[in-house]
Length: 504
Image 1 (cartoon, rainbow, N blue to C red):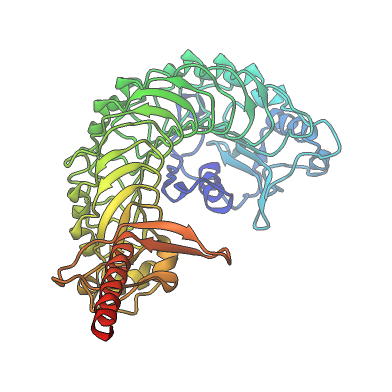
Image 2: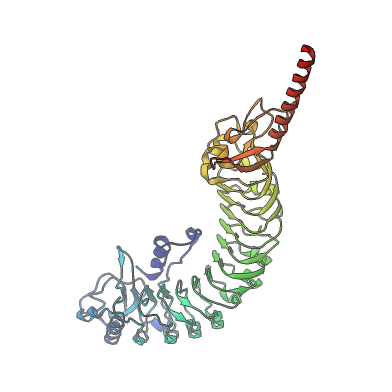
């Protein structure tokens, strides 16, 4: 199993943010580079033919690397390629001399138990790695947490054969060494969840073959790097949970191969650049928890499946055509982002939409009637806005969404029996934070609140406000009900006066 496959396992087995299902890891190429031109093309062999042997200098280097990680038992293996363990891979040359091409450390699960680094010692990265001239992949997972250390600059001398460098959750501290920019054949760099506190080195512009760059969950500062044509092969860019600031560079539009972009939980400012609309292969775009401003226009992202923008300061309305043509979009999250104005009807034209969060904004008007046609919608949050009018969902849709429908704390939403198809809605209306719309012969307002139909019988929206009774239960008081009760009281008083005059 190569290290790129292990990266995929990491994203599947370990806790990730809500958009993790869109993490993409590319398969490792098996073609050889100039520095390993003597190796036989193809994947590492499972058998070890008679007369074959491991390159002696590489074998000594492996012993020393293993000892540095607290795995001195490896010296008991006479030939590290023939008696190899789970975590080492070798490839022969034309003379049947085997060379080490991959080393992996760290217990991912019971099924992928690579050698672990010593918990009670002081494990470190040995410079003996430089004596593995054919090394293609290095994978260290949770190896140096007991002995936090910087990433050693000598890794930049590993040469053009290295394609995968994973130093994940190792507790590395300090700066990312600029020397890593010398690894010009690198396709995968994963430094996730360390304690790295520098800026992103400018030398990374030389990593023109990079396909996955994951520097997430560190303490990186400064501006985002210039993302231009040098990164035309980049498919995954994950810089979330850092301290990066400034604008998203317009040059990001040149990274035409991008599939996943996660810049969430930083301090980014300014507008989302128009150039992102050229990223036609993008599947996941997460810019949540930043300080970005409006306007919003992302209609060019035709492959997009998840757009996560919550926790920003857009302070604008959603234009009708902002997301038009995004037929693959299944998740749209723009909660708590200062949105104002009406909900655009065009959102109902997103045929794949399953999850929609627009809660905790300043949206007004009514819920577009066409939202009732979103057959795949299974989770909707519109709570804590300024919405009024009937909710456009039939009973079946309310049943399907259940507790995943949140529409409370608005100015006056209500349930229209004529639209919903009758009584007997799934979740109770009080739990949704709405009552029945006016226009019924007998009205059932939540928590014992009663009302009668208007004289004309025409449906009218109740204006609802939350209240709490003496038992601490949440209820709702209809202003129209108050008016009705006042009218009934006045009529009753007049009736009593007339009766008394007749009697006396």
